[in-house]
Image (tube, rainbow, N blue to C red; front, side, top):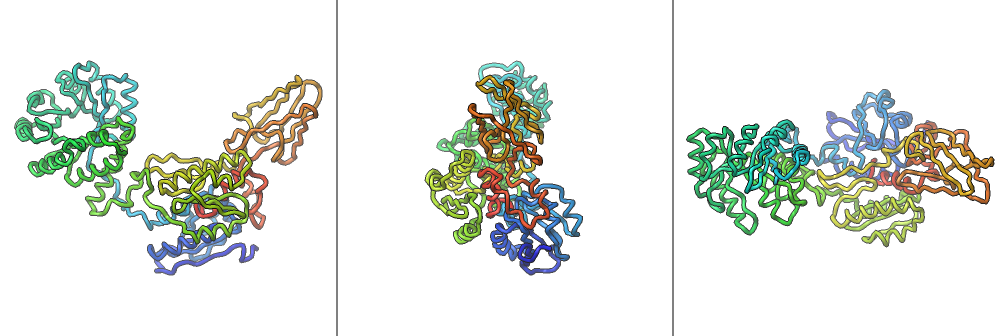
Length: 599
């Protein structure tokens, strides 16, 4: 039986008995950070909880089977929350308790959102009223594969309509084929042209909306059988709009009114006023806003501009927008509008501030940061017992610490020099992380070691080394491939590298060449980014191979392997194995324990 000092249960807040009772499972290094965080949020959300501290330093290295062998959950527990990096079948643990088992977030700082302490969105979030017309500019200049690829991109971002933008001065004879191809993609098609021949070809092929009509061409709409977007006769005014609207209504032609948004410096404010005036004149009419004059013609990232304009549209019941995505800064406008229309709809419908609701639209900065605090950082540094580096960002400063050092600064190069790292793979890993930390410090973003920085909906997941645990690294690029090395003496050394296979080397000269395959060996090949491929052949001596009976010449690149943890269930602690891992892998694993990674 493990003694009380090795397995501890701490009780948390006492609230109404009807609320579920949580048991948060963690390791020794994360106990302090987890406890402080739960103490802070528990009173706000009425959380009943206990903390189980198991005999392991790095909580991220737990497996459900290992937890099942170590944990005895109190009878009054309703929900057991495991560290987010805990991977494997939950059944061994679930079979030992009546409580439900779930994985928490991989990052401790995301725990408040996981528990509902920060997420203000309700179950009905996500509805919208605004349709998105995504225009493909200069469509006649594109080949069919190019046009369809662009249509697919816009549809994937959330476009409801694909608008085919034509070029003035000519007739696009293949516009009908393009319309049919777009419709085959599952999108609705519109045509943007003042050329009546192009319009007729497009509507005949299935285009449902025509951009645009005014006093000069409204009569042609009688023959199209399509909905039209009606605009004023003179840009910068509402001249002729009433006459065109009356004509279309008289002939039962469906329409949407676009008073035309002007660029900044060319009547932007006044153009917003014309939308207000149009809504006053036509309280029930369908309206549309083309946002490209602002997003494409302003030196600013488009997300904020799109969100503001969509908010305007939502309040004024403008039910559709036309957008382009030509400029690099506006390339993701469709996706931005898709998120913004949901946010605006929720804010208007529920009369809630559109804040801390849609993190996907906060890209350059972060929607919110949880400070660790100077005292907490000092406490974490004091608890570290190994030489592996942890990296944090706080108040625009980078903090690096291990069991002997705690450095703070804003220059990653100076910090790296002070860390005195000599191993090449270790240097690569820490350099990569320090550069991420510098970016986070510059932009006041949240930094989590071994995780991607957040860029809103543009965030690309960064594969964690924990996800690679349990796999035996192969020195061959493909399973079963043969790595061959030719020696200049004329002897050919061949090494067969298979999972768990015996590495054999045959030398044609008749001499037996043996290669030592053990951790830290001279003859070592790695195709993992975290290690350096090294091969040493001493031509003056015989290369010898020592094949350990149990390892069978296996090279492990696991970060405190979960497999190792599974094999050592009966040992009293898992604080071991530092010598068997590269420094970069050790740093990656230990980073979680300090409160930035999994609990």
